[in-house]
Image (cartoon, rainbow over all chains, first blue to last red; front, top):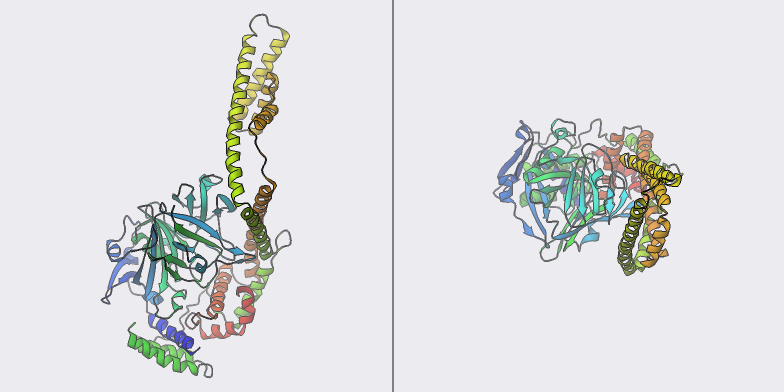
Length: 306
Length: 298
C-alpha cells in the first residue's frame, strides 16, 4: 500500500516536472539520445505537407528486434512538449505475407471484454478501430462476414485483409468497392486519418480543423512503402510500474509526423487513451505487453504463418 | 530522470503523502516539492489539467450531471424497447450459440462446403449441357420455319421478337426482374422448363441440402449481426440523450465520461493513482461518487 502510494506521488512529481511552457516556434518532436542530447526530427513550423520517405535520422536510430516470423519491434525514446517531454514509442512492423492476420471480436454479453492478456500467444495483437461506447465504430468484417456496416466520415480510413493474405488500405470512407466481396476476410475502419495517398498529411490536420493541442496516449496503424503494417504507440516514459499507461502523449498532428517519419504512406489512429494496448511476442516467444486501462471490443491479432 | 533525484522525490513525497488525508491541499505542495527536487525549477502556479469548453472541470455539480447523463445513456431504449446493453447481450448469446453449433460440427461444415462446391460445379455443367440442347433445338426449329408462312409461324415469330426486345431492354436498364420475366417468355415459346432442368441437374449431381444444424448456425449468426446493428443505433441515440440529460454538449459529455472512466480505472488495484490527471477538486468530487461511477464503468 505504501509502495503504491509512493509510486502515485512520485508520478505526481514526474508529471509536474514535465509541465513546460510551449516553445516559441511551435512544437517539436525529438529523439532522446543516450548521451542526454535530443535530435529533432519534426518541427511544427516546418512540418512537411507530405512525407516522401522515412526520416533518415529517425530510421538510423531505431533498432528493430526480431519478433516471431514476419514481425519486428522496437522502443524509441522521444521528447515532445509539455507532458510529452519523455515518451517511449513502442513500434512494430508486420509483413502481412508472413503472418496470419485476423480480427477478434471482444464483446461478451453486453460489454467490451478484450485485453492483450487474451493474446499472449500471438505474434502481435493490439486493439483495433475506434469505439465510443461499447461497440466498434464503422465497418467490421470478420471471417468474411460483415458484422457491422460501414461508418461515414471524411477523415476515416479502412484496413481490408484479403483471403490471399494481402492487406489493402482505403483512404476515406468509401468502401463500396469491397462490400460483399468473397475475397475480403476481415476489415475495419478507424479515424482520424493521419496520412493519405503516399504520405500526405490531410488538410484537416494542418488547418486546425482537427484539435491540434489535445494530448493523449496514441496508437496508430499504417502501411509503409514496403507493404508492411506499421504500429506505433506512445507511452509515458515514467519508471513506475503502470504509470506509463496514463493517457498523456502526442497531439494528432504529431502522431501523423511520427508515422510519416517512420516511412508510412497511409496511417490512421486507432483508439488511444485508456484503450491503447499492444502485445508482441519476442524472438524467444515471450510476450511483451503494454497494457491498457480499458477492455476493448475489437482486436487485430497476428499469428505466425500465413 | 536520474535515479538519485527519483529517490529524493520518492522519499520526500511518500512521507508527505501520509499526511495527505489529514491536510487539505498538501498534494499541490508535494507536487511542487517534487518538481523542485527533480528539476531544480520553481513550479508555475496552477493545476495541470487545462479546462476549456470541451474539457469541463469535474466538480461536484458537473459530476452529478455526468452521472445523470450516464444513467440516461445506459437506460436509453431503441424502437423495440430494449437498451443497447440488452441488444448486445442478445447478440452475444446468438453468436455464442452459433459458435457452439459450429464447434460441434467443426469438420462437417468444411466437408459439406467441399461436397457442395463439387455438386454446384456439376449442376452448372449439367445446366450448360441442357442450354446447349435447347439452343440446338431452337436452331432446328428456326430452320424448319422456311417455306410457307402460316399464321402459327407468324405468331411465333412476333412473340419471339417481342420477348427478345423485352429482354434486351431489361438488360440495358439493369432490370433483373424484367429480364427474368422476358427469359421466362422465351423459354415458354421454346418449350423450355428451366425449373425441370434445374431439378434434373440437381438430382443428377446429388446436390444435398444444407444440414439443419448449419442452417440454424448461419441463421443465429445473421440474427446476432442484426442485433448488433440495432444496438449500435441505440448507442448512437443514447449518446445524444446522455449528453442532453447531463446538460452538456456531446463533446463535453464524451470528454467528461472518458475522464471519469479513467479515474475509475486508475482506482483499481495494480494501477497507479490518478494524482496528476485530475485537479484536487475533481479528485474529491469523483471519489465522493466513485460507487455511482463504477456502475457505468466498473
